[in-house]
Amino acid sequence: MRQTSNPESTQREHIPTDIFASADQACTGIADAICELITARKTAGKPAVLGLATGSTPVRLYRELIRRHREEGLSFANVISFNLDEYYGLTGEHPESYRRFMREQLFDWVDLRPENRNLPDGALPREDVLASCRAYEEAIREAGGIDIQILGIGRTGHIGFNEPGSSPESRTRIITLDSLTRRDAARDFLGEENVPRHAITMGVGTILDARKIFLLAWGEAKAEVIAQSVEGPQTDAIPASFLQKHPDCVFCIDEAAASHLTRVRHPWLVGTVEWSPEMIRKAVLWLSRKTKKPLLKLIEEDYSENGMADLLTEKGSAYELNIKMFNTAQHTITGWPGGKPDADDSHRPERANPFPKRSLLLSPEPLDDIYCMGGTLHRLVNQNNDVTVAYLTSGNLAVPDSEVRRVIELMLELGEERESVDDLKFARLLERQLREKGDFGDDPPEVRRLKGLIRRTESRSSARLLEIGSDRLRFLDLPFYEHGRYRTFQPDEKDTKRLIELLREIRPHQIFATGLGNDPLSVPALCFEILRNALAASQSEAWLKDCYIWLYRGPGMEWETHEIDMAVPLSPDEFENKIQGIYQHQTQRNQSPNLGKDDNGNTWSLASKINRATASSYDELGLAEYEAIEGFRRFDLNR
Ligand code: PGA
Image: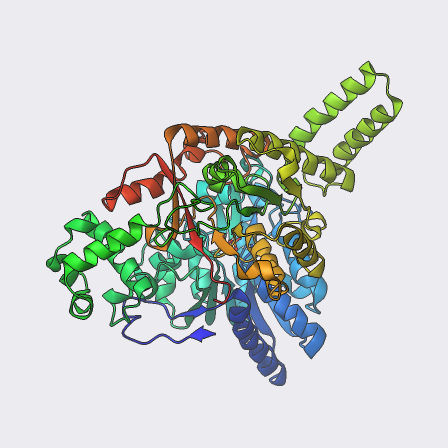
């Protein structure tokens, strides 16, 4: 559903922004606008000129356009397209080149003429780049200018590849990629060292010349930069903020990407709000952070000076509110994530009974489990709950070839020592396949399988540190992942069926899951969608009526204190044990922006920061000071 903005609540926003319940809903509206343009131009016998983007963000829009082409006869015969950007130094065959992306995600499926598809050429010799950038600008002018420009946004605030420092007048040129952008691309390139350092991009000025602009953004990772672009000053530190200059630009974003806009995050600052218990909790905890005072020290002036005078009128004194919120936050803390047997549970996040519980942890890829909730997992096991950890996907795409090479060498040595012809034959086959596919070719099934098995061994050794036996681990290898690549995954009923079977077998009392609020094409988000479908299909099952669903959050996206319904504190020893468990995932040390190297190039250093921020936030509220806290939010199935 599209949320209409009232002028009062959007007073801080300098760009019209529409918030949608899902990316798909947003894409329907944009596809309508594109269809209208194409049809109107066709009637007038003219071309429609589209500015196209790449990355995860526009994929769902392209799927919708392809659907309309197939099912509703939408033709792209009169469309001329210009892509925003391209990595410099990649040929069009490279799997991460935007030329290939466009073929795979759109061009191969619609009737847009090859001669009408324009992309910057990333494979030109350096001395020809300047002239080709000028020619690109000229080609856009000759086509009559861009009618509709589609944009994504990077976490640096880039549009196209206009990184911080880009001026609003900039034109098509070669640029140096920001280190954050390169880190964000590390997963796709299987390691940051493989991400190109340069790219060719339309300039901010080129983009601003488009007649109409839609900027799309999904997932909480984009929330901060969206708020800065929409509400902050125009600045080259956030190039997307220059879109404030454009007379016809709309941001179309999902709820997660909107979560840092003032009207969503601090609505009491921009209008009257309905003071639901959830809203009160959010506001009072924010007030404590803002004033840097523990909850119990907040005074009436703090409330009234921060847009919350009406809360006092409605709900009583600061004293009463402070105590109430202190107790609410206090009651989220528990050392018994599976419930404490024989205890009064009226103020505990989990029920005392039944005990022990059948606890099911769903980990989208290996490592998500221990990274996000290793301490809680250890507690659940130690407190004798019946714990199962299910790895939904094999995670094989995130294993670099260098790791496979080591295993093949081991297989060869062993094979020779034991004179095992079959083993040697298989190891040589793998060796040849690896060589033939080259650095960026798609992995043949045998190589992919081996990569998945490597990740299983890592999961097992990390589980061992948490005292979880191998028999408690399940590797589902969901099919959508096995047959796809990032951005092309399309789960279907086969995936849901596998999860339904697992749920029926385990009949869990509690499920720990993640993926709500992630980029909708990411593995966690797709896995969460599969879980939702599996739960919807299990509505009539008795176990579901007595099942709590706890959401954990991935790296860099930890719940904020007001969102936490269960906070499991970790002692320094438990936290250290968890970090050791994370280190068992050796193949992942350079793979993920939040796991791998930090700005100083220190491998793994980010791992030791997780959960500490949550603990500090509790401390700052005036609650007990812990080493680390793993936070969970209860998910209401009927939401
Ligand atoms: P993403 O990238 O769609 O992959 O998040 C967007 C961008 O960098 O512009």
